[in-house]
Image (cartoon, rainbow, N blue to C red; front, top):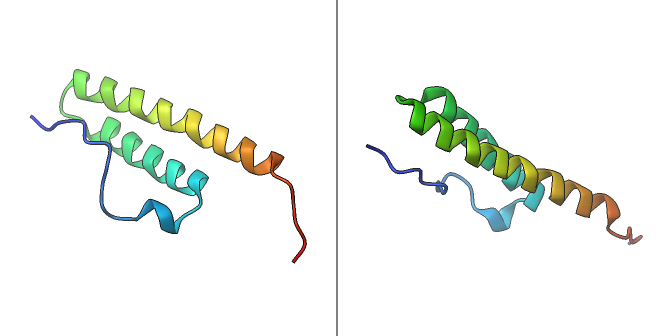
Length: 71
């Protein structure tokens, strides 16, 4: 049985905007939910997807509220 590993090494978080990284992690969790072999695995992956979705929304809101500076 595979553990619900929430990290993959396909992208490095420091190279991406936090909202983009969270969206990527949400996508990974959704894929795991879809391809799960058991109901329990699917439910766990769905919970991770929901948690990452909330983080995406928070990061986007923070980005929208951030002051804009002209260079």
